[in-house]
Length: 414
Image (cartoon, rainbow, N blue to C red; front, side, top):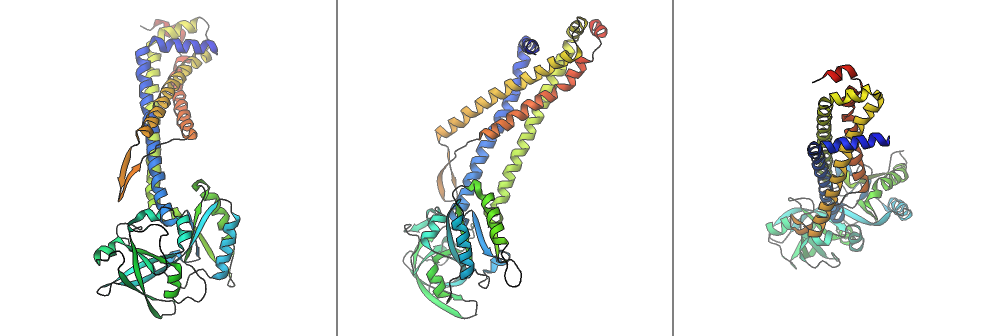
């Protein structure tokens, strides 16, 4: 086998120009794939972080059926005292849970005493909320960020603030209808202006959870959802499976499920964009496979054609067809290996250079977001093994042709 390796290496050196051109093409493909994977992965992770850390959390627990009617912000599908306690006990037992936040979601009428409009409200415990979605405070355009919101204060979405000319420290009134149909109003002071956290048309404001209970005249402790933050997002599937098993199996007196657990992927439309990024990555990998396949096969076919006399000579000298087959396969393997090693090296150097240069970009109102491309060892190994395997497979047909060549016919070839 070592002799075959030396012969294959010598043959590649004999045709140095062709070897360099082919390996360069493979290198280019490797670099393109690894850079795309690292940059798109960095962008995807950043956007996922923006969504989970400023709005949703990694997981959410609701009462069964709440999510299906969430657009109406139903108050009759809230989690009650005993149900909340069950969820808290399950979360406290899970070591992967970093924090969780109780929320009441409600619709209300927003009035500045001259105009009135509708508003969606997220009532939160400020301390819990900042631990669960730590980037929420950074979405405040104006106002004091520390502590998020106190009793009697409101964070007004930018869309409503501009439309109704509401400024910091202005007094406004919220009017809401509770689940029994009674109406109640309560004054608030504008603590801050909040960037629309649900998109350009966002109408989501934030108040203290105690104010929501007073506004809705809730006698008992109840919440619309429980948002969960994990220590590591990589554990999301395991935690979801655990909670889905623990909570999803609980049923009420009517033998119907009580809880439903959802990941951020189910709750955010951005997940479709993330899936598109993954699909584009797969498409790029398929292109790389095609480039390697065509390149190696073309080179090996030309190598067999140009060395017909040589093949005939070594066959006439007693070289077995299996060794001739192994020789050409080894050449394909070395071409793939050379292109892969150089491609991986250049890619890692390029990724390191991009991190050192600290490339930044703006996303909405957020400026100076740093792009931090990185790539895992598993991804590098996967791409490398795919390329080398395809290089070997591409050399099989030409190698098989060379191994089956009749020595006499080959020696007569001009």
